[in-house]
Each structure stands twice: as structure tokens, then as C-alpha cells.
Length: 125
Image 1 (cartoon, rainbow, N blue to C red):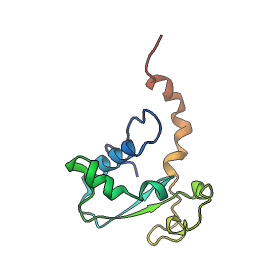
Image 2 (tube, rainbow, N blue to C red; image 1 turned 90 degrees about the horizontal axis):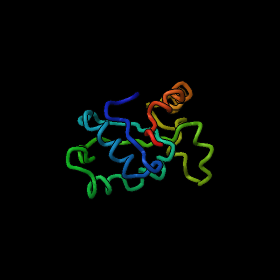
Image 3 (spheres, rainbow, N blue to C red; image 1 turned 180 degrees about the horizontal axis):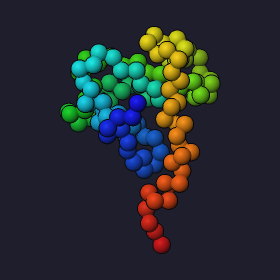
């Protein structure tokens, strides 16, 4: 699923601050839902202190203090790259309500978007 406000300019890679803001901005339209299953390549690291970062650093409008439960998931393609043990809790194969989803759908269309890169680059000399 692609969400409104779910795209951001990552100036220097996927920094937590950028990803936090994009995540909160996209999700604040859906406060009130009981559950959100979030697939992210580094969910095991990013979700570790997300509630503390939200409480201390995020604007009030997008803070995660709304009662929604989050289930972090690592996509099946990226799961094999995580060599640290105890990653079963992030596996698509073991999380209830996930079904046959692999959490890689958005990455399948990147190849189609490559030609757009030249039109979105900052013009320089």
C-alpha cells in the first residue's frame, strides 16, 4: 500500500529522522486503527526505540501515542541478509494476519521508475 505523505527526500540515505517523519506523516491519517503491520528492510533496528523517538523528537501531530499497535516485519528478500539471531519475530512467515505477503511490492516497480531519475535530479552546471 502506498500512503499519502509517504514519500520523502532522503538527502543522505535512510536516516532514522527522515524515515520517522515520513512514517508518522503517512500514518497519522489512520490513527484509530487497532493494528498496523509495517514492512521495512531494517525494521529490526528502526523499531527498537521508535516510541521513545516519537515521544521526544516528533511533532505533536504525528506522535505515536494513539493506541495503535505496530508489528514490524522484514521483507522476505531482505530477511536473509540479517545474520543476527532471533529475527523470527520479524518473519513474514510467522506473523499472524500477514498471509502470503512478502513486503517487497513497492521495490518491484523501481526499475520502471529509473527513467524518471533524470527529471528529478537537481540541475547543476
